[in-house]
Length: 255
Length: 236
Image (cartoon, rainbow over all chains, first blue to last red; front, side, top):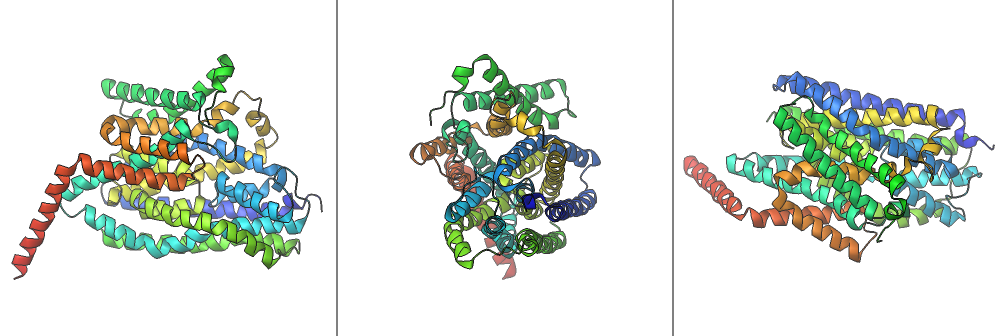
């Protein structure tokens, strides 16, 4: 029973979930693509949305993969894989698994060898995270109708709608900027705010401003969608360089 | 706006959401059935008492926050595949910004949905391939002493720095209030979850926008009142 966490049945469940996610995403791509063409969105815009979204998702996906491996020590590789493919995020999965194991007298730092502990963790992770799937369909239509209707009433409301949606976007981004400046991680103290996070933030901002400035100046319109993911990689590269060249300064955190 | 398309989108979203709900339960039900290992109801109840207040309230805040920004299709997909704040949301925002479309318009809906669906496939495939093929070497890449560890620890500052630059350059006046308030919240409550923090910074940003653009707000209110009066007179 030692390898029950990575038995063929577990892999079977994982593959079924992966197939479901891919099928759902393809369904929405096909429907949206058709409708996009009907309402006159250019093919180049749709293709550029696809390519920039792929590029954009690579680095965060590798980072998610790393968290799958971090949880694999206690739970085996398959459960973290499934949980981070549907709904999951590291903060939630770690807290759910750790609080369950805490009640059962275990810990995420030790491998689970008891199937009942394993199934209890699986139930807790699932039950804690399913609520949005039941709640969203009940309110989504109403929320969208109210907001969409208000924004598209006339030219003035559309202008105000632009300002409010820009403000909402900036609000979201600000939360993460604030975390890079003063945040504390509950799961990994090495990611607490400090010299490194602020440097990466500034390098990424400067890289993006320079690249988008170059795109405008030299009219590199087809390069424009890639400016953002490339700036993100430049920010990440700055972290590597800083860690190698100035390890003592890079390790300074103020949280 | 083609309301029929939006209606269909909500039907598809609802069906796929509930199907995803069933899929999610294949894991705990499958594990319990195959290993004949059912958890004690009392233990599950105890755990849920800890998790529900924390995560279900955050989920309500997140649904209310994300629908106006990502649109219906993008939100339905995002809540199935997760990793919303750190991946789906910035990906959708970036795609709409590149395509120069606004959220909650038909064009915005199409672009946001395609972007998030593509992002979901990309991450699902990378995670699956990574688990199957690179599991033996990945721990070395992301291990404590690895050269790449620092880069992966700083994905979020890099991602939101790059994403924020474009918005801040355009709307720099709006950026001060939410960042300052976000930092203040984290100084006094360092472990505030990102869902709650985001809600606070969005409110701060919208309040700042209302103050900065108060003239536009006044004009909008009077134009809406004007058009209401006109339609009332026409009806009479």
